[in-house]
Length: 560
Image 1: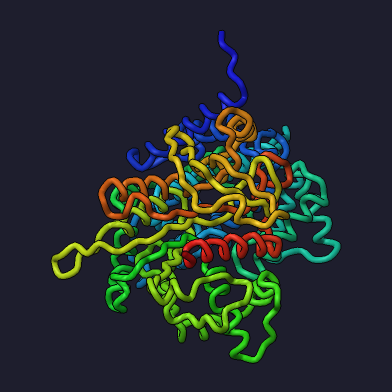
Image 2: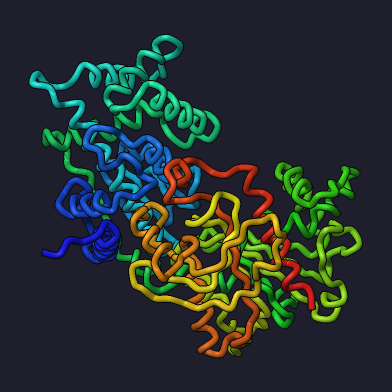
């Protein structure tokens, strides 16, 4: 019998998880603790994502992975016994609590203390993401429940003590807190220090952002739910998919509304016939580079000679910059479509070149001659990138006529996982490989190694567009890197953008020789333990590569 490699097993697990996840909206309902949920759990365990560390252990709880998931799920998810996925609900006039997770632009509502509704607007990637998190939580919940109820005489003393703490509705303090954490460490199979670190991390987020209910409540909530399910004291956690979810997944509904809104704003401001440069980016680096020095000068503050030092000083001055920018051709467009993608329109003709930071090499003559307009769009999420770009590049209907917009360039920048390098290094895609289906797309990248300073580590090569950050396995990634694919990094949107751009060229919406620029900086290395996304955000160390790429994109598209 043929023996499969770890990479082959992991790829099969990814395929199984994707197939099951794709089928659930059609099926309409599943139980995370039922047969389908068990198959999802088996696939995730077989995959053994690096980001979830010790998830595969029967005894040891995975705490870094728990922190990662809790940051991306609504507060109180540990109490859920009923979860609904829907494509559209009008909850604004209800008393249901709207909840936004700490680290994900995701809309959810607490319909009751035990029922949550996710309003999904960004595509299938969001379905994969939430299902992965729910599956992980259920695996950990089963593990905790076994530890709580594995004694001949019933519930363990440690679980009874945790129950007492949670029911008291007051966090223990000082010596009582130390004892409670030791008790919890026994349940989790972790050291006291590891348990304390996770408690501190979640407690900080709880106090500053009200983003979770604290480690004691989370562990008790997920463990108690499974204990109750085992005793038949309550129905199993049930996840429902409403029929209108299909409109979001298959018809680009929210992307179409988003695109139409944006195009009509361009028309209202007489910008639709000017060259448009699309930049998929964050919402601060392009704005700060073009307006930061002018804004600081206007309020009498010193302008740092180093542009990256200026970027660091501007992190807390968003209001000052925006107040200045709107007087010089900057149009912030908040999202009203439900897609959660904000846009910034920048009329370069109204930017004051006399007060630009001196390190920026932009052609004032080109701007005066061509009158370019920048469309800076916030980061998309996975497959949402195709929907947004596909809709954006289509002609707009105005007075029953199709008006083709003049797209002059498209630039994609962001952060990604790197395989051969370290955090902060730069990756320049030469092509994209789409995980799960094997599609690949060539890229004629307008950015090259020679554009970057010699002291910056730059890796050029294929990039892997993955199904989700939580569905990555070290063996698969090492195979993509070491084989003739020679993949240098992984991200979630690139191939979807390429697919939309290629389709628009075929349909004649944009020229075949349109200038494209792609670049990423490394936010993590998913094949190195302790360097995954679960280890936390980069913070200030991400400022220099972010602004370096942003500056180079501006110089590429705003020079002859």
